[in-house]
Structure formats: structure tokens, C-alpha cells
Image 1 (cartoon, rainbow over the protein chains, first blue to last red):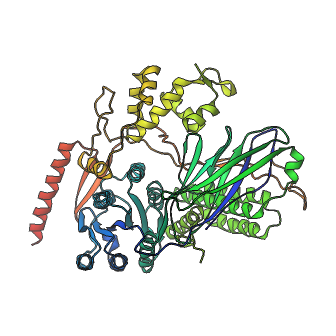
Image 2: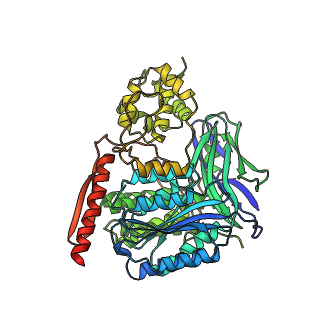
Length: 418
Length: 212
């Protein structure tokens, strides 16, 4: 188990506000094995609209079947299928052998047919999980879709808001987008607001890996509700540059890291905006790692900066590891903006997003080979975003960036230190 | 009465300056005294920002929030924000409320008005980056100090900032057969929703008979 924080630079300007970055690195401990793990209370919510027909629905059924097979009698599962109607294929039940077999048979009968009432399908899945929330364990709904919500509640902001409200009430939403036609912005924002993760499943053959991995992560949680508790003096503003929810409580900034799995490695960056002060004075912040059950005991770290004049600031050493991570995150953010603009036909804006971030990174990259390679990559991608991009390419760029922002590996899985 | 700068007000209310300016433009907050860097805000602004946040959490659209706030004095707003927020209902109750009461929301305690419709949810705009580009100038020579990376600040958790306050509706397309559809303009009230459900059930029954 490790927990460290590193600033990008040690000095700040005394004459005006400065932005500095902290790289936070932590590794979760190795889990004690079952039966001490927390049980999972889950619902698989499967899109069975007409566009899922053929291989997609078949592989999705197999994936759910395989994922249910990984559960044991201490877990609960439900299966909901939706098109313009919602069917409770298997109501929430303990994952005993007979229940799993019954669900498997019921799943086999699910075929693709109508439109997409994503909202009601998802709500029914959440209802199945919520009914048993009084029991201990993780409450997670796995929502799968290959298209756009076109029936029922379709307003994007409303769907995201409901995801957030359900998360406040203890039910997390994880989302899986299949193929080229789903709304990746919606699916990701629902998962972000809903306390979960979002995955892009480009090919039907990948469905099983993603779904079973998500369930596998749920069964491998070693620390629940992990947060960074950041205390800073008045006038210091802290927010994550990485994509994590955050809020303020009594002057402290709380960054929600979610549940961590055994041996998970997480790197994230905090952006710290510091006020001006007097040369020689110090300003510092304290970062404490906390979780629901006290797994991370007394994990605390601090960072401080010294006020100095312009010359000292300009000549100070830089932690290049931190610079690289900052550059990767800003690049990821710009890519997502470019994809959004490209999708809306605003090619000039997409071009500008990529050009701007490449220019800014060049401003501090110096001769660092990694950052220069990143700049070259951005310049290549700038050529792509100037014209209409195919939907799969948009999704690939969006999710590749999103995984970077969330500290996940290129497939969206939790990074592990094994 | 305490007086705040915009930055201090935003820090206390946990909102961005952009949010404050937007609310002023939309009539949810009165303008500050003074202008520019000398603009000053007071406790009334702070309490109203907190109440806006609480009402948004209860799904009220911004127009409805404005109507309610305009009927309240600053002391009344302060009283409401000092009362503890109502306890959160369970996920089951929340879902039952959503699925069972499409088209209406329960009244907010302490307010006299009728329940607000679900029709016009507050929209969150796409977060847009505010970039502070570095000053133009020659590139740094080798070995020279490396300039500070400028701030690219994009809110991760964007506030609710509807660009306008439309009366919103949308058409729902319900496919009955490849050749027959029903189009319904949402939102509908509860009784009309039930009528549509019955209509669909009957239509599907008739069409199924035609196929058999």
C-alpha cells in the first residue's frame, strides 16, 4: 500500500496568483480473499432494441450469463431487458445455482425487437437493486445500450441528474456503450454522476470481457468510498484535474475516488490555485486518504510552496513526471472537446482545441521526449478533427481520453500493481 | 451586514463567477452594488445561492425557482437555508416517485405554490474551457527557464446554467409496427399518460389480431 504526493514545482510567485499541480499516487492493498469480501447486489440492464439483433444480443446474453456465473450465494442479481417495453427477465434473487440456471434459461429467450426506452429499463433495474439495499454490499446497476434513448425520458441532463440522485441514495450506475451509435457523452456522464465507470465496447466480441471485468472488479473491492480530504488555507483553491467528483465540506475539498480494487494503482492530479504572498513565506496543504472502513489508516501527506520572486520562479526545477501527467490530462480534455465539436460540425473549434493544447504543452515540454511525442500525436489528430470523423473514431478518441482522465488502463480497466 | 467580493462569495457558496453572473442575468439574484472589481455582494446573495442549489436538487426548473425566490425576503431566504434539508428518501421511493408521477413533482415545504411540472428541467450546458493562453513571445532558448503552464480551467462539476428558459416538450415516437407509429408530445399529465397506455394496449391488440 502506498500513498505519495508530488508538486510540479516548489516555488510560487509572490506578486500574483499561481497554479501548481500535485501528482497523487496510491496503491490499494491486496485483498483478503472471500468469504470476507462484500457481497454484490447488481442488476444487468440489457438493451434489446432492434439494432441489437444478431451477434450483438447473442454475445451480450452470453456475457451476462458468464458474469452471473462468477457470483456466489452471498451475491444478488437481477436481469432486465428493455426496448420500448421493459421485461424483468430475472427478478432480484440470491445467486444460488438454481437461480443462476433459471436466469440463464430466461436470458436465452431474449431477442432484439423494438425502440429504446433506456430510462425505464434502467429505472427498473435500479428498483430491483434498491429493494434489497438494506442488506450489506455494493449496489451496482450495469446498463448496456447500443443506441440512443428515443422513448420515455430522453433529455440528457435529466438522465444524468437521476443518475446522481440514485448515487446519493446508494445505487451506482455503470454504463456500457456498444458499437457506433450510442451517445457516449450521455453514457459517460451518467456513470460519472452515478458513481460508476463507463466503457466503450467497440466490437461485440469485446462485450464479455468488459462485462465480466466489471463484475470481477465489484467482487475484488478492497476499499469502499475512498476519498482524498484536502485541507488548505483560506484563499487556496483545490480541484482535481483528473475526472473525479469533488465537493467542499467545511472548507476542505473532498475528491471522491470511488471503490478501489485489490492492488489497484491510481494516479491523479490536483490543480492548486495559490494566492500571492511575501517572498520567503510558506503555504501548504494537507492531503489525507480516507475510506469508509479505515483500510487506509493514517495515510496523510503534505505539500508546501515557498513564495519567491519572478527570477527564482522562472529558474526553479520541475518534476517532469508531474509535468507529463498534467500534459496527458490536458491533452485528454482537449481531445474530448474536439470530439464534441467535431460531432456538432464545428470543425474550426475542434481544430482550435487540439492546436491550443499542443501549443500550451510545448510551452513547458522543453526537450522532454515523452511530452514532445504527445505534441506530435496531438498534431496528427488535429488533422483528423478538421473534417467529419466517423462515429467509431469519435468514440475511440472520446473513451481513450476518458480512461486517461479516470486513471484507468487503455481498456478502461483498473490499473493494477501486480 | 457582511459584504463580499465576487471571489469570496463564490468560495462560500461553492459556485463559479460565471454561475453568479448567469443567475443575475436570469433574475434569480439582484445585481451587486458597484461594478467590476469593486462589485460587492451581501448575505442575501449568499443565502439565495444556497437556496437555489437546494431547490435544484429537488428538480425544480430555474423558472420555478425564480418565481419562488421573488416572493421571499432575505430574512425568509435565510430562515429556509438554515433549516436542515429534508431527509433523503430511499432509492426505492425515489424511483417509485419517478415512474409513478411523470408530469408532476411534490411541493416544496414552506412554499405556497402548486407542484412544479417536470416539463422544463434545468439544463446543464456543455462545460467550456476557459483558457488563459501564455503571452505571445519568442520560444524559450535551450537551458532557459521554462515558463509556467497556463491555467486551463474547466469545471468538472458544471453548475446548472440553462442558456434560456424554454417551455420544453418533445415528441415521443412509439413504433407499433414497421408501418404504424404513434407520436405523443411529452410531457403529459397523469390521466393523459394512462389514456395513452390504454390506447397503446388496444392498438397492439388489434394489430396482433390482424397479423394472426
